[in-house]
Image (cartoon, rainbow over all chains, first blue to last red; front, side):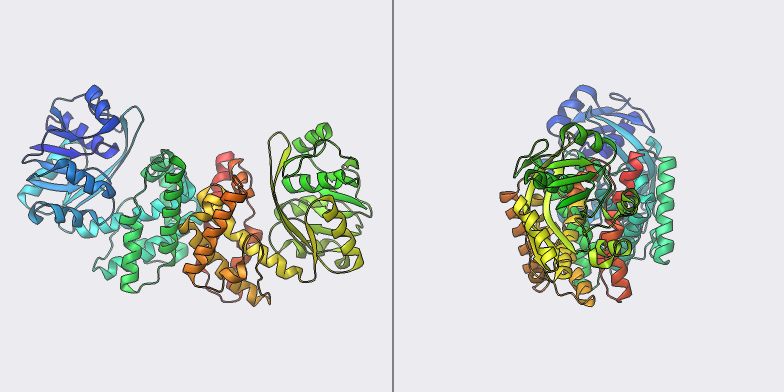
Length: 319
Length: 319
């Protein structure tokens, strides 16, 4: 089974290094500085597991995508560019590690619907300026479907060391992750601090709890009933009182402080490096949905303005 | 006329230096590092006007407060400490340069009601680590009342170079400044950028416009009808559509970029130096008032959580 991975930020690098380490063929599609780093050093990972160089598999760089498992490990706002770079291809399966619930719809516009798999990637890392990805959390990658084909992909990635599970309710998984992710995005952009310190703070925890509640209303209108998944039990958080929901979020923060000290959301890393944040495809999407369903979601609307505002100021400071 | 100024941050230093420059007696009440700086260098100002050293008046340090004009130039959360430092005194008049609308009530609890004057200080500066205050904006200090006594104080400060005006509707002036100040506080804490860049950003301008609108509802319940005052025409902003209000705020941002480039809110300076922000006396006060009047102010409630959250995380990082 050959994997083509588009983009080698933290997640693409961690996935590719594990697959190479397990002896698979990996073709990375990369550009710019990252291309030079990978040509020189291969895919390097430290943290939960260590990989340096090439593993025992075969690494190719920027080869055409053939009948591969094609993985988009770029942010959704880079999809158009990435589609154009990859060019025409006929992958066996294609899925994306990106955040949000819009990515699968975008993939289905580009590839045959039967080849597109839903995916909810709940693992984390941070790419250092030296090109080494620090692997910090290995919770689970959920891939949609229950066919032999899907189970074989899942088994391959899981055996390589990234916890991976097939799911026949992938939309529920995606939404349940997404809602917690948005809450963490907003509070992290406000605090610009570690995940633990951010969520353990009762004022910011209350904002996170409110975002989860408002998002759950939108999910419900979409026909999705949220479920509890680590690290955010969003079904519980959105169904209890605001005070209890806030306490539940502060507890998650305390867990992060203990179990993943120093964990920072990728958005905080992006802000520190002057990189663009994913706003339109995440908070922008939720706000549009809220308006179209006639839902009053003041916390989400203000959150959209906060993250967009910080994003634009950041970009203008960089230029 | 002798002035006793409690606290020599940016505003206390700028006021004291102007009064000394005009030949008045100034007694400053200071502590810690600032005490040593003033003992060595006097009250130094650059920016809109330059003062170095002592001027032609007479500067005393930490002398008892006699029948002076007593000016509290410390934040409201330092009032208790400052009251205790100043000790028993019987000033001719007392007012405060602090933000918010709570300060006058606090002064009236401490001093005879007839000696307490309302004040709305709309001038700005930034105290450098070298103890020099950079004087950036000289809009107007409003002092409440129209008696001969008040007009004489106003004339003295105005002649010294700080634009000063007496007002017989000081509560309206205080609220009208306060409401714009809160909008700037929240957006500045979110953006952590210059005032101009913050307000010119349409996403953050919309947040500022919403805060001004919600605060105007609370002012109205207090019996205060806002008026337009530089830099925030809050009466206009709170009475037009959100789109028009947002445009009005972005225009203020563009004015700041042009006329006061580099201006940063004191809260942004405080965050950069790990100092405590004024939250309870400002946003906390508004949120409590909203609840007691049964007003729905979601943007103010979320703003309170944002500023409190950032404040607490900042303090914990410092410790």
